[in-house]
Picture 1 (cartoon, helix red, strand yellow):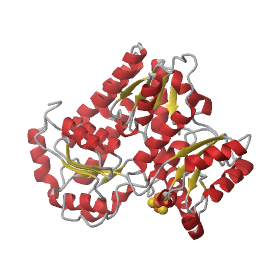
Picture 2 (cartoon, helix red, strand yellow):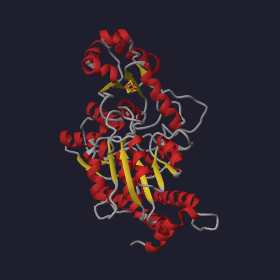
Picture 3 (cartoon, helix red, strand yellow):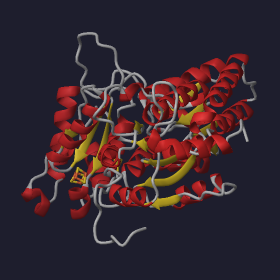
Picture 4 (tube, protein in one colour):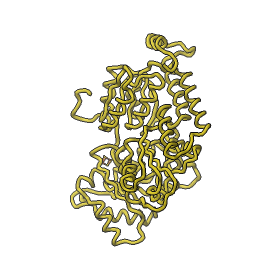
Length: 458
Ligand code: SF4
């Protein structure tokens, strides 16, 4: 770390309600309600709208200065009544904010009392998301846990696998569903944004997700045979189901690249007692082929990766599989699990990465200035660093607001890995080679060194 300790400059994280709302947008007929001032919901809608290019509704209790002094109970009750009357949701996820947490509104108590005095209410799920600590990642995790702990109801076994995706793109969720279908595993996705945040245009405007995980499916999670969390930072619901209902909990690395996807498939097929089908095996073979083809171009290239911890960990292992060097890894979360995972993945590498856990983009930029990297992988927040240092940026994660198609970026599984190899390699070719495939003058030394050291699958 550098000597900047007094402030965060260009954070590499967002506040907790953002993650909460992302999780709720994967629940069919759910309305997120932020207990706070209306600027919070405006910010969330703006950020989500420009990333997913979909209309996003986030309601607010619209607290004012008076509520900051006297409490927001009346606002919360009125907001619930209004949302029920206008939108008729099946479930309302009520997330707190900086303001309501700081003044100490007892949201759970208010809702409990409100329920005793009002009939025919939708499911009301309180979610504590104090925004002055942790990040959107914990906000997502708390929300999935709150959904499960409020709704999961044990009855008879459903022979399904629960799967918590974490904050991946809609197309990544769709790809995970496809893989499960190919293998023949029946599943419940927590939560499923594959259609709600990548919806077809049908001329109709929906104010709530008209697709996604249903309330009945969330109730049914207590009857599944296991829960697999694709992100270590989104596994609280799995732990809750294990502790409360003895549903086995399994945590894997995000299946980005070869080894992570191998491990994910091994875990889900072992627990489900099924085989990996030929079609998926072929996809694996094609990924290896693509990696071999691209090796000479990628070997030895230095990469800086930043963003949500599980995505950074997943990409760190993947770029190493491509023969690249993850020189700097940065996440806004202060996370022991992140540091341990990176150390574990890079333990046999002679080039140890600089690890910024709880870092910001200023820290990242300073490290990039110290040790030049060839490629950046991360969200749109890094585009200024990319411009200033003339380093290509491959946009991954959230948010991506300066390109279209964020909802269609897929990085999970073997097939997506093939496209990632192409994207990474073509970016390297575009920036560091001329049209005849020769290294550009400024880059000849690096390239010659790489070619000298390169061998396939070493
Ligand atoms: S940091 Fe606090 S005030 Fe700002 S958007 Fe998040 S919850 Fe609202």
